[in-house]
Length: 481
Image (cartoon, rainbow, N blue to C red):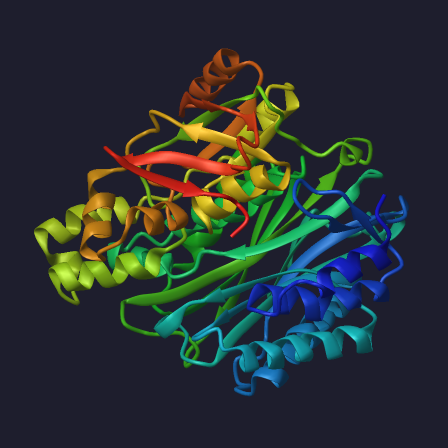
């Protein structure tokens, strides 16, 4: 197992832009918690909690005080509000993850947010386990809206008095027994795709995107999701009961607790539609200690299988698509006949790959898994392959939806840019030694699967991914950019 000192040294040596600044600033808080352990991940080491077996975990989320405009003070209030929640629930806060949704991603602003979170975490003896830095543009009226999801603990003896799901003093929480496993948290949000759902009057769609963004990430560590906890920041006539009910139903289908904290965000998020909302949060999972010693790993000779569900844009790179829609069909494109047709595609939720990933990993069919959100072929496939000196040439991928190509053309998006940002019809991949069996399992889960390449050792120094985007147009990502 990697030591905490080694982990912190590696984090601090990273670059200082955006998400790296967030990781670099928050990582030293891991020293605040004696339960933090560092385990090996597919491409980098990660922090987990090893809690005494006499404790259960309680998960709850909060935003910063919406009345506070100063970023540093707003960030501090995230931590104080989470600790107040813990006090009201009768639990002990231990560690949290955060999401910073900002207007511009300005580094000075981000530094103010990070120092606010860190100052308060150090004051209260908490570890910041994970963070997400998202730029939402004009969707954010304040400089930044910040939220956190807390991992608190309670003795099993006292937990007998606490229901598994609890809404107390307007606090949504969920409890589970980690059963001697590591506890892991990763954070993410839906981003600007909620604006698409506002126009389509389809508020519940964002819940599936939120689940996919968080759960699919957890899959890469062989994690078993236990609680998905989000904050719905809203204005206008938001159908909160509908959201809460659908979250509960999704949780049952996924065999997890799916809880939502509500926050009136008037003055902090845009109000252009009947209702406006943002959805960010985290998933808290458990990782089997024995399996944590052998992370998922693709090997030369493995086959790469592509997975596709119902055509959708997932939940990344939506800002460019929103701009293209306005350029093509005007500011009220939801009322334009052709605009409405494309809106139906944009408002299709992401396929949740977690269930099929978990099945294939559990049956020993997947040696590694990849989902095409936030970096797509460049960041989510080429980079992890290159990390292990591997290369794959992709052939006969699932084709992108024609509406995807139309929007890419409207943005004058090059093939390199498109495959670096968007799934382009292929939402996820697995590596496997048994492609035919794996494809049968994928189809049994209601999805499409096809073998699209075979993993090789670096070819003449070439790592990562190569594909033919168009006839005669080859796109290559080394994974080392």
